[in-house]
Length: 171
Image (tube, rainbow, N blue to C red; front, side, top):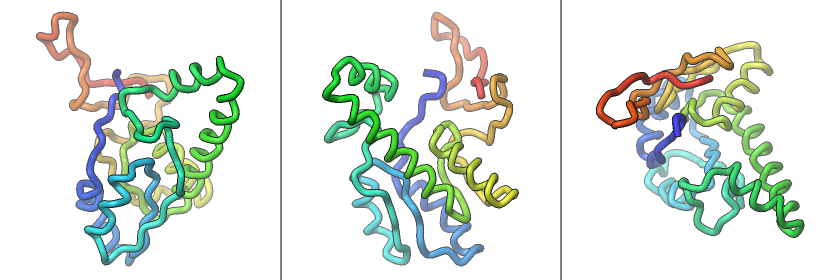
Protein backbone atom coordinates (compact mmCIF):
# COMPACT_ATOMS: atom_id res chain seq x y z
CA UNK A 1 0.00 0.00 0.00
CA UNK A 2 2.32 2.73 -1.24
CA UNK A 3 -0.43 5.34 -1.38
CA UNK A 4 -1.95 4.39 1.97
CA UNK A 5 -3.76 7.19 3.71
CA UNK A 6 -4.84 7.53 7.26
CA UNK A 7 -8.22 9.03 8.04
CA UNK A 8 -7.86 12.36 9.77
CA UNK A 9 -10.51 13.91 11.98
CA UNK A 10 -12.35 17.01 10.79
CA UNK A 11 -10.54 19.05 13.47
CA UNK A 12 -7.22 18.42 11.70
CA UNK A 13 -8.64 19.65 8.39
CA UNK A 14 -10.18 22.68 10.10
CA UNK A 15 -6.85 23.57 11.70
CA UNK A 16 -5.53 24.09 8.16
CA UNK A 17 -8.77 25.48 6.74
CA UNK A 18 -9.15 28.30 9.25
CA UNK A 19 -6.30 30.46 7.89
CA UNK A 20 -7.73 30.06 4.37
CA UNK A 21 -11.26 30.88 5.48
CA UNK A 22 -10.06 34.01 7.28
CA UNK A 23 -7.93 35.21 4.38
CA UNK A 24 -10.61 34.56 1.75
CA UNK A 25 -13.71 35.41 3.80
CA UNK A 26 -15.10 31.89 3.42
CA UNK A 27 -17.92 30.73 5.70
CA UNK A 28 -19.26 27.78 3.66
CA UNK A 29 -17.27 24.56 3.39
CA UNK A 30 -17.99 21.66 1.06
CA UNK A 31 -17.13 18.26 2.57
CA UNK A 32 -16.43 15.45 0.11
CA UNK A 33 -16.83 12.70 2.67
CA UNK A 34 -18.51 9.37 3.22
CA UNK A 35 -17.96 9.52 6.97
CA UNK A 36 -20.89 9.96 9.31
CA UNK A 37 -18.40 10.85 12.07
CA UNK A 38 -17.06 13.78 10.04
CA UNK A 39 -20.61 15.02 9.47
CA UNK A 40 -21.33 14.75 13.20
CA UNK A 41 -18.11 16.65 13.99
CA UNK A 42 -19.30 19.67 11.99
CA UNK A 43 -21.29 20.61 15.12
CA UNK A 44 -17.96 21.56 16.72
CA UNK A 45 -17.58 24.39 14.17
CA UNK A 46 -20.79 26.45 14.43
CA UNK A 47 -19.26 29.46 12.65
CA UNK A 48 -19.26 27.54 9.36
CA UNK A 49 -21.96 26.20 7.08
CA UNK A 50 -21.06 22.73 5.83
CA UNK A 51 -22.40 21.26 2.61
CA UNK A 52 -22.03 17.65 1.52
CA UNK A 53 -23.48 15.18 -0.96
CA UNK A 54 -25.83 12.90 0.94
CA UNK A 55 -25.75 9.11 0.66
CA UNK A 56 -22.20 8.84 -0.64
CA UNK A 57 -20.40 5.60 0.08
CA UNK A 58 -17.09 4.83 -1.54
CA UNK A 59 -17.39 1.24 -0.31
CA UNK A 60 -21.09 0.54 -0.56
CA UNK A 61 -21.27 -0.61 3.04
CA UNK A 62 -23.30 0.65 5.94
CA UNK A 63 -20.06 1.38 7.75
CA UNK A 64 -17.24 2.01 5.25
CA UNK A 65 -14.04 0.06 5.80
CA UNK A 66 -10.79 1.78 4.84
CA UNK A 67 -9.16 -1.66 4.60
CA UNK A 68 -11.37 -2.70 1.67
CA UNK A 69 -10.05 -1.42 -1.64
CA UNK A 70 -12.56 0.10 -4.01
CA UNK A 71 -11.15 -1.97 -6.91
CA UNK A 72 -11.85 -5.17 -4.98
CA UNK A 73 -15.40 -4.06 -4.24
CA UNK A 74 -16.07 -3.24 -7.92
CA UNK A 75 -14.65 -6.59 -9.10
CA UNK A 76 -16.70 -8.51 -6.53
CA UNK A 77 -19.87 -6.71 -7.52
CA UNK A 78 -19.23 -7.08 -11.26
CA UNK A 79 -19.50 -10.85 -10.85
CA UNK A 80 -23.08 -10.48 -9.59
CA UNK A 81 -25.48 -8.92 -12.08
CA UNK A 82 -27.68 -7.63 -9.28
CA UNK A 83 -24.83 -5.45 -7.98
CA UNK A 84 -23.62 -3.92 -11.29
CA UNK A 85 -26.12 -1.05 -10.96
CA UNK A 86 -24.68 -0.30 -7.55
CA UNK A 87 -21.21 0.12 -9.10
CA UNK A 88 -22.65 2.54 -11.64
CA UNK A 89 -24.51 4.52 -9.00
CA UNK A 90 -21.51 4.86 -6.72
CA UNK A 91 -19.21 5.82 -9.60
CA UNK A 92 -21.78 8.42 -10.62
CA UNK A 93 -22.03 9.77 -7.05
CA UNK A 94 -18.23 9.96 -6.73
CA UNK A 95 -18.10 11.89 -10.02
CA UNK A 96 -20.74 14.34 -8.78
CA UNK A 97 -18.82 14.68 -5.49
CA UNK A 98 -15.62 15.50 -7.41
CA UNK A 99 -17.42 18.02 -9.61
CA UNK A 100 -19.00 19.77 -6.61
CA UNK A 101 -15.65 19.86 -4.81
CA UNK A 102 -14.02 21.35 -7.93
CA UNK A 103 -16.31 24.39 -7.59
CA UNK A 104 -14.62 25.44 -4.33
CA UNK A 105 -12.37 28.50 -4.04
CA UNK A 106 -9.78 26.86 -1.79
CA UNK A 107 -8.89 23.25 -1.03
CA UNK A 108 -7.84 21.36 2.09
CA UNK A 109 -7.34 17.64 1.63
CA UNK A 110 -4.88 14.93 0.79
CA UNK A 111 -3.15 14.78 -2.57
CA UNK A 112 -2.80 11.02 -2.22
CA UNK A 113 -6.56 11.02 -2.85
CA UNK A 114 -7.48 10.69 -6.51
CA UNK A 115 -10.82 12.40 -5.82
CA UNK A 116 -9.07 15.38 -4.24
CA UNK A 117 -6.39 15.65 -6.97
CA UNK A 118 -9.01 15.33 -9.72
CA UNK A 119 -11.21 18.00 -8.17
CA UNK A 120 -8.25 20.35 -7.82
CA UNK A 121 -7.27 19.79 -11.47
CA UNK A 122 -10.85 20.34 -12.67
CA UNK A 123 -10.91 23.61 -10.77
CA UNK A 124 -7.60 24.68 -12.30
CA UNK A 125 -8.86 23.82 -15.78
CA UNK A 126 -11.96 25.98 -15.41
CA UNK A 127 -10.18 29.08 -14.15
CA UNK A 128 -6.69 28.60 -15.64
CA UNK A 129 -5.35 29.22 -12.15
CA UNK A 130 -4.01 27.42 -9.11
CA UNK A 131 -6.42 27.77 -6.21
CA UNK A 132 -5.05 28.08 -2.67
CA UNK A 133 -4.61 24.63 -1.14
CA UNK A 134 -3.25 22.72 1.81
CA UNK A 135 -2.37 19.05 1.49
CA UNK A 136 -2.28 17.13 4.74
CA UNK A 137 -0.14 14.32 3.40
CA UNK A 138 1.79 14.76 0.14
CA UNK A 139 2.81 17.55 -2.22
CA UNK A 140 1.06 18.26 -5.51
CA UNK A 141 2.28 15.70 -8.01
CA UNK A 142 1.98 16.52 -11.72
CA UNK A 143 4.55 14.09 -13.16
CA UNK A 144 2.18 11.26 -14.08
CA UNK A 145 4.03 7.96 -14.42
CA UNK A 146 7.12 9.24 -12.60
CA UNK A 147 8.39 8.52 -9.10
CA UNK A 148 8.07 12.05 -7.80
CA UNK A 149 5.67 12.37 -4.90
CA UNK A 150 7.11 11.87 -1.44
CA UNK A 151 5.42 10.86 1.77
CA UNK A 152 7.47 9.88 4.82
CA UNK A 153 4.37 8.61 6.61
CA UNK A 154 4.34 5.60 4.28
CA UNK A 155 7.94 5.01 3.17
CA UNK A 156 9.09 1.97 1.24
CA UNK A 157 11.05 -0.28 3.59
CA UNK A 158 13.34 -3.23 3.01
CA UNK A 159 11.93 -6.77 3.01
CA UNK A 160 13.14 -7.34 6.57
CA UNK A 161 11.54 -4.06 7.66
CA UNK A 162 14.80 -2.75 9.06
CA UNK A 163 15.79 -0.11 6.50
CA UNK A 164 13.82 2.79 5.08
CA UNK A 165 14.71 2.79 1.39
CA UNK A 166 12.60 5.52 -0.13
CA UNK A 167 9.62 7.79 0.39
CA UNK A 168 8.78 8.24 -3.29
CA UNK A 169 5.56 7.04 -4.88
CA UNK A 170 4.37 6.89 -8.44
CA UNK A 171 2.36 9.88 -9.59
